[in-house]
Length: 141
Image (cartoon, rainbow, N blue to C red; front, side, top):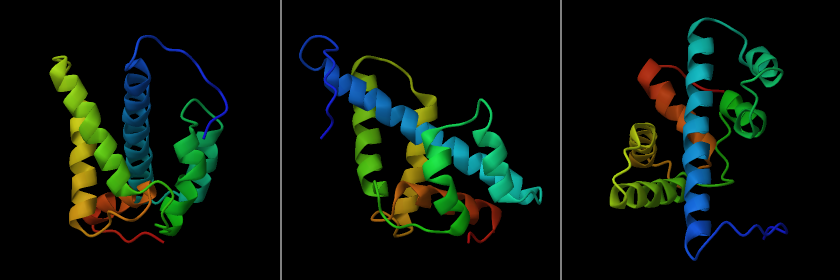
């Protein structure tokens, strides 16, 4: 487990921070998928697109670490679709209990459900790009 311990508040606050992390990760993965889908449809070399984006304000861990796997069609599990879907469900349950609307989370959750419905639950998060493959009738890799 991690070596950095940060007290973020009363009991349960750490769980909220974890849920916020997963919310950002899910939406960030979706943003990478959308950028790659748009670049691909425009005929842009995806490896070059990724490299350029990493040099600017769009840089992210997801683009850096999962972008190559998306481009190559590698769906090997790191953090699985099923696990992210579980976390996004927990995010939505927590938000609903607090009457906090999370429309971006709802959208990305529906795409994770699509991925699982297509048998990709045990694949890594980068397999979310296959949802965009299906929406655009493209093939990754």
